[in-house]
Length: 165
Image (cartoon, rainbow, N blue to C red; front, top):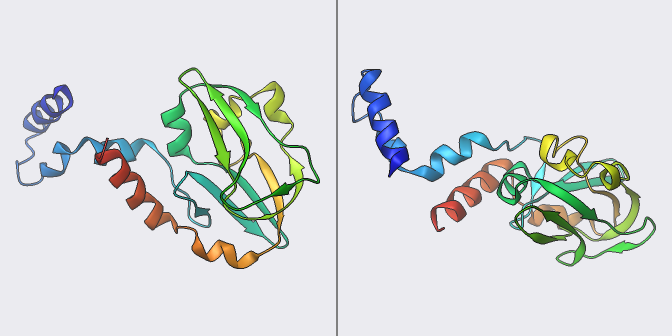
């Protein structure tokens, strides 16, 4: 309600007509403005992203997910040379709000783990798509990437999920 009142008074001050500000009545459309969804990545409905380059896929959690988690204080990741199975947990992220499992969006051999996260777990908050990546996997079934969401589909998924809460 406070957000709607602020939006309405701001729109009035800026002389924006009510027809052009109807989208401001939905808090979820405003919340999407603060999360970044990158082109060139694939997304799981469980909020992990995948960047497939050559024979390796990098996996992390989305900006949307880290925003909902809050400040990340601990990350539990697997050892390299283990296996990741699509839909199975491979680790956990602990934040000031909760601990959440991390699910692998694809299957394959874990070839690298982001060891920086041991000392600096907050990289997931400050750089979820670059420095805050979690693991690198050599996909055993690259066709699993086809079942993941495009950036546009993931944005729609987040909007719908936020609206239902």
